Length: 311
Image (cartoon, rainbow, N blue to C red):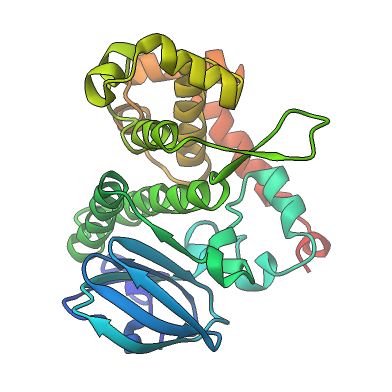
């Protein structure tokens, strides 16, 4: 049964997320009343999901909604971390009934809600992803930050910080769901597969936004010629490295502003900027609004959601 986490500062209040570390994966920790993220750290796993045989080898992640059943057929010392969550942990408007409504796609576009595509898909092949060691490291760091926030609850904003790290994991999952292919130019009926070396480079940038990325630092890490890096960005994403990095920082900051109460200093550190002043300047250049105005407007817009939009 899904209980959520008791907020020690507000007796009776539940924060709708739980975390579990398991030396050996146990299906009893996969809750049918909520959504689940299974982070497979080691070993391998043969399962039945919706009566379909599925094999996973670590490192990997599996995404399950409340309608998908999971049965373990056999495992080879499958060490795992599990997150149970209700989508409304991300935002109060993201009720399970809401995200299954016909209007949810419209609400995603209107309010930048998370699509949760890896959880909601009917394609069993798309609910699990092999992780690179770098992406596993990012997911694990976020997982342990969530667990630490839940366990310590050291101030009034513990659930906000937990949500911010959870957003990092959800963003990774949604990028992995959609980034196997990128759309070809308008007028083309084909999709273009991203070369593995470029996909690895993109993932590295996305996983380490807190770092100071330059073409030189990417060259030092990947030993890919700087001109080639720029050429790959132009060819496959129709942009430059600099513009891509700015957009990733802006989009990540936008989610923090929409769905958490992290202050400017905290957001700046999470996206690789040196101060809250630099963050305010950067965000205003990108959006035409100050971070505070953007946050207030996002909250105000969500409050205007009418019942007939989400039924």
